[in-house]
Length: 360
Image (cartoon, rainbow, N blue to C red):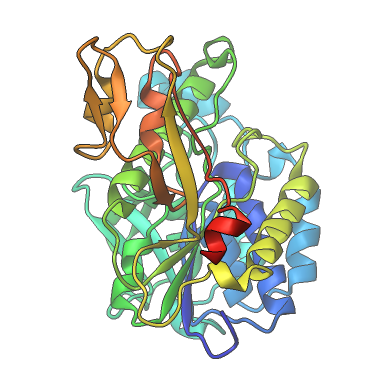
């Protein structure tokens, strides 16, 4: 990608891990790469809105690193005590409202320095609404951003034009599909979700941790389905390594910002991995070899259900056999591996061809 490439920057949700997007924007602007527009979900919408409203990277870094839990999450004790199960949410809206107003002010989408699209969901109809698109730009950005951050049950829905909206990640945490109607050459997608990371003892951390983890799993599954057969415009997918950090962790914010910067610089420093004009699909792609450890395989058939049709078969002994061991994968391929109950399937980088083979 160079300065002539028109690209849409898609910033996904992930709780406080979303401050990694600040590092992403820093890396891009250092290279003179400015997105034609930003599409954001949840904290991705907040970071994108703040930058689009004119906040500098230095200011955003400073705000992010100094954030404390009370700046975003304050338990709604009165509502929980008096309304109980009819309480609008676990946390009060005022702290997040103040933070968003501090960063965005009272601007509408038409006032922003850079085009922005914010992903939300109508909590009553289930309709996905992208504020900032044609006919949906004459609303305060702060309201759309709050709605996009309103994790159901954690923060109350936001009323906009007489309807009530919640976090767009409810149906699409990384809304790359919007890029198809925005007319750019490339989609740069930044995913800060938990991906396939294993957790330890989630059940011991209370109902909010269990709910958050279940949400992560659902969002990852939806993302894999949406991107499995993706064609154009091509997507370059960056996943900062923040999956080990909790979505509500305020102790590693500097690390998260720096990781967003590192991951983006690493991608930009590998130009050969980026799609060329006319390419389709999800990038970067790498050659892998898939193996099945027969001694572990119990013949349950989960791989036949989860993997693309025909990739696995069961042999005469009822063991799984991979039919196409050598493959080229994008970052969102291979989700079937984690569904093997005995961890019998693995994927490793394919061995480089030997010099003699390459010569001849």
